[in-house]
Amino acid sequence: MMTRKRLISAVIGATLTFGATASAYAATTFKLSHNHPRDHAVHEAMTFMAKEVREMTDGEVRIRIYPDAQLGSQRESMELMQNGALHMVKTNAAELEAFSPEYAAFNMPYLFRDQAHYYSITDGEVGRDILNSSEKSGFIGVTYYDAGARSFYTNKPINTPEDLKGMKIRVQPSPSAIAMVEALGGSATPLAYGELYTALQQGVVDAAENNIPSFGLSRHSEVSKYFSLDEHTMVPDVLVISTEAYEGLSEEHQKALMEAATKSSEYMKGLWAKSEAKERAKAEKMGVKFVSINKQAFVDAVQPMYADLGKTNPELSELVGRIQAL
Ligand code: GCU
Image (cartoon, rainbow, N blue to C red; front, side, top):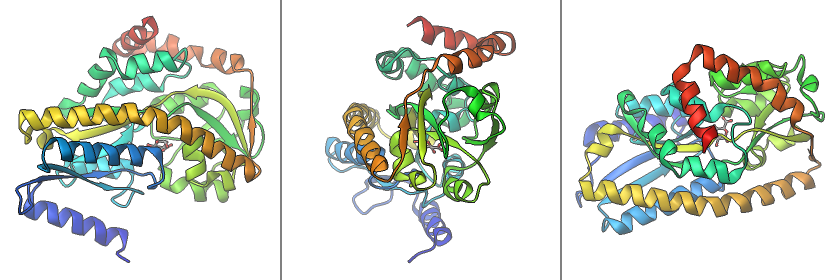
């Protein structure tokens, strides 16, 4: 089997030699990296998108998907894309905060009233503005993929923020996620997703937080037996493309790509609901307890984050205000 390092060099080597538009049929083939396994709903949704775009462009635009962080963590993939070695990355709004501050809005806890409110943002004008906000960093957002709500998991029930006191909690590399865990009384440890299973197993961290499908498919359910449904954030997955790759397409192909992506994002909503139910049932069979809790103490504890935003970051505070007003 090819090692990850060799695979990355082979992929990058091929890119540098042939560029993005390299087949005998003059088709454009984009390489897309993400960090979930093939049986994750987002892989299925993007496979659907790749098929759609290929059909819509008579085979002239193709997308080759590299799952499982084969080409590196989300962070590494973003850097490869900025260097021109990769064309597309499926990452998420927490990871993107470091590249484009507008994404921080999605990382504010208890921002969305419910799923309908969340979809009105990801499918609407505010969501599109955020997707376009990264142009100066050399990429743009193509679409969002539903990633449900994130909750804490560890080896004891978390009923109130007090239960998090003194715990080392893994977060994504997002300043807002760090601020949230600190506001709740825990100690935040940013780590790449791929390192988390071992970190939980060896006690490098005590707890983590994620949505149910990722919790199950990453097998964190083997090493954390309580999933407490505090549902603090709704952080969408985001598909991004380098501006260089996007601008290399004809207008017609750009339109086809965007249409295929939007369709796949709709398709994902159904896949997501099924995946949540399936992964929850699987985890329960393995002895995981899903704990329903009263969220009010969590909501109260994070309110200072909103007050601070008003003082320290008026632009972001305005964006958050736009989301709340919808
Ligand atoms: C979710 C998300 C990933 C992310 C992961 C994480 O699973 O889909 O994009 O890497 O959370 O917590 O790191």
